[in-house]
Length: 344
Image (cartoon, rainbow, N blue to C red; front, side, top):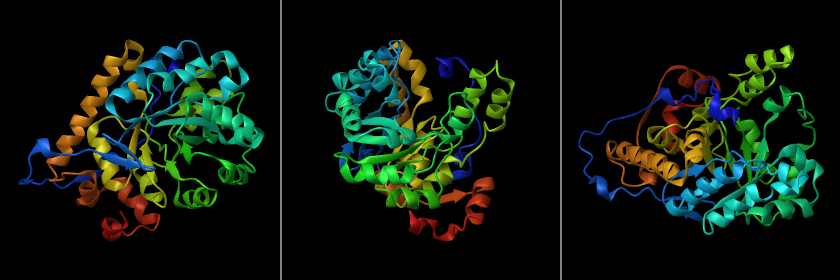
């Protein structure tokens, strides 16, 4: 897979501009720290969500098996990649259904694009949900990628109305999911009105699908140029989280360690989605995925210990220092940094 073989990361998450205030006397025992998270009325042992990455090809079945086995054993959630491939090619259903088979009690999120919501009737949507016995359905918003790929669908008209119509009939919660360009407060408000129960911000600073498309389009100079030009486009993850707190938030986009997770939770996210760092371990097998996620959780616990936070709600209330470009953007976007503690 191209994402595992090439450098596809781009931009800044803004998380480097977020600093915790060290607590030299935390007044707790590290073993007491509780990383239990709650999202859409479900409890998770840690605020880590395995982001939807793949499916739709026979080679991805083993990858999804490893990821879902890890989710099941650790008591966390997992998403799948776009299920459009399985609708168009039923022989690829197993690459998705394997997730529920290997994770019978995990929180599983199905996935389809906003443009497909306009095309598919409720019978197809129900098939997507049943395919993985989903607990929620993510509607992914990937118009940056669509704009720079040869087969891209750039007809974004009517997506909000289609999502609203779907939400009115949907039997599971709907999650609005960006894929690397972030969510603004204006769009977050529109998504809430359209019936979204949560937002996966998919902020800039992690995998750049524009950069991925630039690699794919190397025989087409114009598309290669477009992908390279827009590789850094988007709203950084840290800012997207703060802009989207009108709904429960999954902070996805460039999350590479437990300190990143801690910062996202402190900014107000309920969970943090991790994708690319788990892809290469998934090629090797379940135990490698387990090892990576457990390391991230241990890193989070250290951040909580050093800020004197016993629980995730405590972490949401701990003081933060916001500097650099992130501070400047938040000020220009109308945030009162002195009031952020209350807003969170």
